[in-house]
Length: 147
Image (cartoon, rainbow, N blue to C red; front, side, top):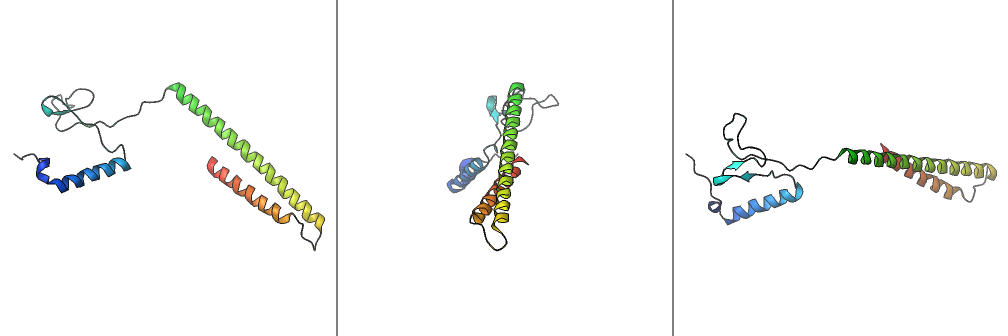
């Protein structure tokens, strides 16, 4: 029969390394540890339910249970659906408004270039093109967020 490994026999430096590794794992992935509970005499048993396996006899080894979040109620799901729908509608309206503003700015630029003639550059042409570029980037970002 194999003797159980005692923590004290590992040495203080190895214990410190194992502890540090556990802390790093806990910080990076908080849910990495499962919950283990112990019954009478230090024998592990499941955190919930009986300590017997599927065959009706005592289960061997620790029984693990991962923490679970409570399921949302039907009302919470419905409210979240309504909020998401309202958010998408608002994003659509914002994108539509930006598109209309972009169209108006492009039309203004076209009109000012037509009025200026062939050999002259309108004074506000550079400002209008920068405004068009800015609006285009905003619309692109909104559309990426909607996808």
